Length: 150
Image (cartoon, rainbow, N blue to C red; front, side, top):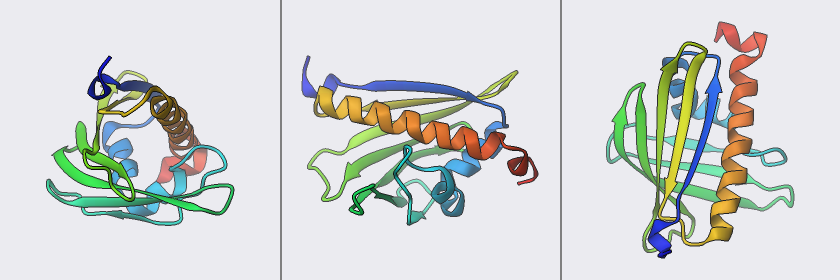
């Protein structure tokens, strides 16, 4: 398997509209609420939501160190799909790519994350843990009674 062929697909159905889930994914204040697996806090999120625009998200680890993820939006199809590059700073020569689809379902929205161009199986496993943790937080934010009024 070549390095460029390592990829990951993670799915989760969330009881909210695609518009609501897309907004939670792309609004800095909302991102800071749910981003990161358990034990990781998001102290900062910057989003320039336009094709060619950039994003930068902080991940404060339990150790207190902050890891920054950044990239550029390649496709924005509101509220159906986002495609963006993904680099952990300092940026790699070839960034990874993330596609997020927000697919309407009877039960809400199925979020489908495809993370490509991963450099190793170990990195793939870390991404899988991270994405599942992020989706846990997104479900918690969007499906709690207080979130219904947002």
